[in-house]
Length: 153
Image (cartoon, rainbow, N blue to C red; front, side, top):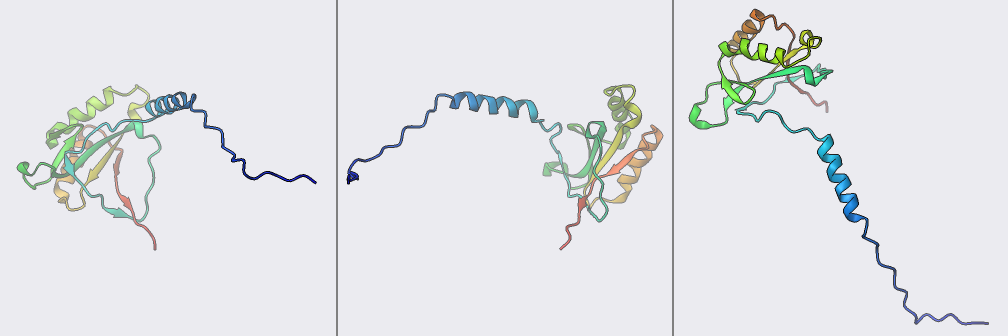
């Protein structure tokens, strides 16, 4: 009967890392291609109000956002302001904003354009009513109110 020698230490072979740079570059290109960058940086603080019945938007590429809330920069005061794209605006700037958004879309998609209002929950309703009146004047009748979904316990 033979005896097994246990004194021999088994060393595991080293991990082959020659393909590691290829894998890293492949992941890097994947994330660069699939990730979309944030289009607008928020200039206003907003906490969306809660809602019980929430629906997701179908095509987010056809949505134009209007932000309303207190300015992030304290020097501009605490009164609610409107943000269109990356700048502050007034209610009178909304028709021009809507026309630019329509021009940026295809002819077939223009009638599907939705305007989403991201309004802070502490904002007075007067400014929201003024925005809705301006949207009505330029025939932008598809309006969406962004909200948070209430979590059920």
